[in-house]
Amino acid sequence: MARTTGLALPAGVKLLRKRIDYWRRTRDRRTAMPADLWHEAVALACSGRAYAVAHALGLNFEVLRRRMAEAGGSCAGAGAAD
Image (cartoon, rainbow, N blue to C red):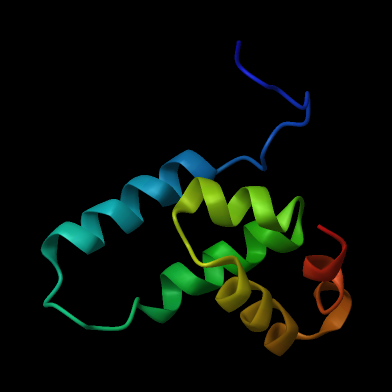
């Protein structure tokens, strides 16, 4: 039986996952993810459930949480509660 929480992920998660997957397939090995993809991931994580967003995007939650803190503003504490 599948476990569901009833909480939807922010809009745009699926599209960003496709873009990240494409970047992963076409990148040179051991290159950093482009800043524009990180900015979008941070924006999505700040708008909702950070851990669920990180998992859906295939990103390391701790790295995403650190980038959220670096973004500052109201987003700084969002990752700690998730």
